[in-house]
Length: 591
Image 1 (cartoon, rainbow, N blue to C red):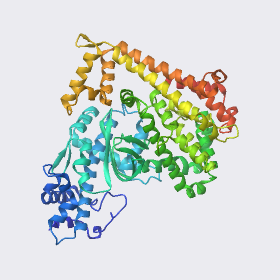
Image 2 (image 1 turned 30 degrees about the vertical axis):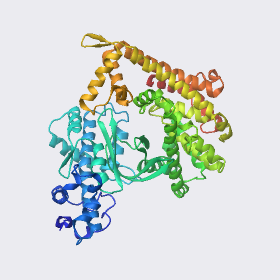
Image 3 (image 1 turned 60 degrees about the vertical axis):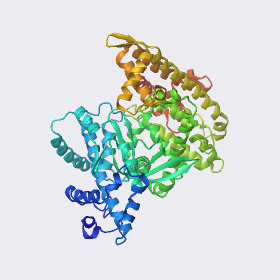
């Protein structure tokens, strides 16, 4: 019985894959050899995917136990799961390759992370590169060879045609077509009793993105925290820059992303070539980036690479903890908004924009509620037991919030508001004043809450008060709303209009209609966004300096540089003040 399960090399009949880089014990088989095993499983276990049978009766372990007493149940269970994992990874990698090919053909159009970050992140997964070594040009060559073959198989498709193919092509496994990646958990993976699952959500460009990841689940105040310890396959639009995020069932934290951050930012710090350090010191953006890192490591008593290596587990643990409390802060902050405003915010959870910046600040400063609290409340709590560790975490936080460098103003607005707020709590001796932070944190949080709610109401009002020119007919928002609703239910499960108003999709569609059918309204909307962004940076500067914005030429960035100079993070004397003015102008143009 189950003879096909022995269709592997002798030394592969083990409890572990033969090499860490492989997905399963079946990774050395050809597609034809693997399909022979999968076909055997489909024929012997037809009830596994038969939805007419109750789900509990279709659990793989239960089915195997009912098959025969003359088999090693545990071994058969293991081998079948290994074969399904292998097939699943191969099928999903095909989708990931479709996506990177489409991105290449479209020159990474509409994808804000850009080519280099996206490609390096994807290569780590595609080539199974250890997170503590560098990606090389030979790794990219391996991908190029695969993409050339894929392009040949697809024919002369454009990038947009590949995207459409990606959306329409089902996930095929065990003789069944799955229309959505999100169907894989309830309709297959949950039945296997395994320690991995599918994490999928939507992306404006490709509609879907996913990680198939090995995970462990922890509980914080009834909230599920998923630590994804290994990512078997991921789409390129799930870059390693995204370390954590909230989703319907809980929070996911990507340990591979944390390891890459540790390696690139902290482990390599003392070993970087001296000429790179000298170049960095010539530009205030990069000088401050290096200053934050040096301060954080010195606060950790790490003065060379050997010291950093010794502290690696502790540093990674602190990074992980900071992420957990930041995401918990998002949960607290989200609960302070009505449902419509909360869903509208989701339009801006990515990219360098005003709403995203305010959401991130509020998550960090979120007050304690139950066992949940934001990052800063956690810093305050830690400082009462171990001031040195709390201070170290604070400087790690500052470093993680400074995104700009000498080459680009990447996430310039977020850098300004997050670092501007945090650096105001460091005294001239470089010590963090946690007592002052504790006394002011609630006041600051409420200021941010009131500010963001006012901005959201202004923007939503433009959408609701506009008249739309559709097919030479002028319609108000109430009429437009019905059209959006009908479009939605034509291709989704039917829900009431009232229920649909409480979704992210509702606001996403409404904003698209504003852009396409009300040009003056769209201009007004963007003007408000631009004006409110400039106003908030100025309001924040006045808020943290007790209305002394004029002392810093009304510039949050200049305030940051002035404080960094006072603390000893950089020396402004090393940088021509005219050069700093040029950076300010560049930031203004970027915004």
